[in-house]
Length: 502
Image 1 (cartoon, rainbow, N blue to C red):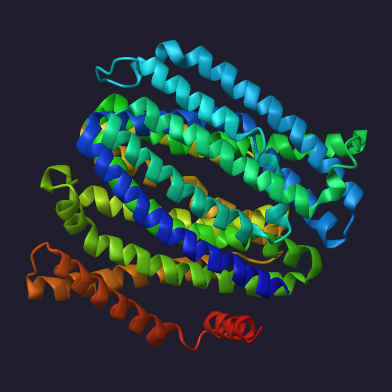
Image 2 (cartoon, rainbow, N blue to C red):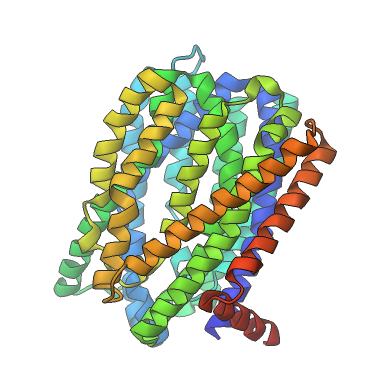
């Protein structure tokens, strides 16, 4: 059953991936041509500031989800209702906090955006409203996730993406309005949450009849401990992810932020598929941890790590060989960034997608307290380093600061915590695999660039198709050559056969 539900979630992830990869590119084309690169940079800045405002969530969703895994496995409806009531109250408080903080910082928003944009404060307030509204009903979605029904949320989100982008394109084409562009996001975010909330209510009617179920004092104490640990972690993570855009806007320029966001949109759309796969199976991993042996957990961990490596290696290879040609064809050579910037972005991308597997199992095992200060330390290293390097290397310096900070703290610390306190094993095998997989990606990139240099192809649609085809053949061929006899490959092969048989 667990394999079947994981397969359904992964299938939904694939559908969502193709939608989120193609449609936003069309919308962004309209955005750049109608509103310009400067407003695109402002839009990216607003999104990242809103990301910082969502710090108020503090990892509460993760802590609640961790507690619901056992309740779902045991069909304990009272326990489920108890945590959902608490979650509902908490998210309403969070919505209010985001709105209040957003209103407070609105008068100072121009400090971060070095561009002359009339009504900038009004546009930012619309983003604040969009973020606040998203918390009113979204808490119910945790039940779909922990019950291994994430595919319902993913299919709903796919419809949301299609409708949202369609209406945003209409607003841009007919009205050239940044305000209406944001209003569409508010409306469809609310609509998506309403649809999903009604779906959850229909599937879990017992929640409505147990509105007074509450946590006891000891549960609140344990929960606060986990939330405090997650709070430290989430604050550092949010600062780390949002500060990069803020630093680029402030110290390099909002136009560079707009160009950088074009690259990041494509990278996140491509490698985001890998992250969505791990999110799709997160409930199955939680169930695995609650019902299976530690030895089984370790075996599944390395199998998932191999799957993530394979998909991410192909994604990174395709980005490396196609990105600049795609940007040139899409919006022109004027929007190209230096190759050094692209290389650093791909290094950071590899670090993030592989650590996502570690985070997946770390959260499933509830190892929040032991990891509470890591992201704060990473952010403390990253911000001054990125600012200093931006003055020397410009945009590349900001990204290099992120690379150094992750290598100095995150890359080694999280796996050590997971293996020592979660798997009760040594972590050297993980680092061996991580290094081997990284070298494989470098090797495949060098082979493809060598082939393309001999062919000497110019940027065109046919060239993109030819390069993509060659890259896919090289990647799959070399993975089969080097890894077909590995335990991880055999496990995935058997799991695929079981899923198809069902």
